[in-house]
Length: 382
Image (cartoon, rainbow, N blue to C red; front, side, top):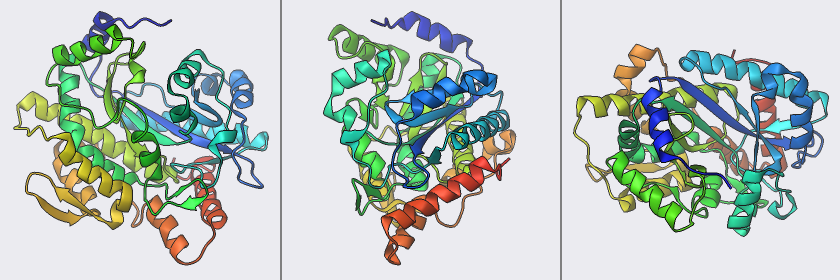
């Protein structure tokens, strides 16, 4: 049984360098002919052992038909993306040689979750035993970004400030209109399936300090609710092992360019929140019920809908979320050299346009898988 050393977590953050970057991307493993989910993770993991770079970069994610590729710690965004591009190129080459295709949407359009085996690791055995149906049902794929934030009290306050930003990032990233073989009518069915089912998930409370956050963790430990901090699945959280703030609200992205742009925007948001904490910029701690209004709009309509300026109580076109986050993060983006280059339509919008034109789910998914292969495997973004 793992133990959770909260003093060590504080020490990890005390030694953490600011602004290091880590990127984590989850891909579906597919039969290249049928595009059905293919439970091949263990095989690819074992074959990667001969590749020193890839061996340390592959991780499992609950089901055997999913694989995660991680950049490791980059000195900055450019370094992390360079590392991630090389690892993705190697992963796609390895998978292709074994007759495996990879997909990058937030959900698989028609796969039956009841047929997906859970990978055999201690962590995921614990997840399955603790959550049962909730774990079995979670066949989803996402993009996570870590940013080094020195001092755990500061990291908690950064997470507080990022709460209202999460819905905007979700709307920008939405890329999962299908679930269980149906057009869900949503732009991010992944978020509805995962965030609304898992415990300790979605928008966290405002804590204000490490002391308050620690008291909550100690409560969970004392009441046998968790045994490891990763059982807190919030959409933003301090990561005790890495000394980072992790943003984990976004759908997986169909193209490498979109993934790069989204990773850059997430890095900028975390960095700007840290800057605002340091400079004492005034901050309104919004109630979860307010933020959830925007989360629902992002889930349902993505960038095709309207979001709410929660301080003014006024609507605005969701597409303006990119401009709004760009304006807020302009100071740190100028210093870090982060440009925002998003396509006219995001993944969900492109899929919904095809659906509206009469394309089948197989045609829609095949188009997305081809986009993924062309940009990740062939190195267009590098």
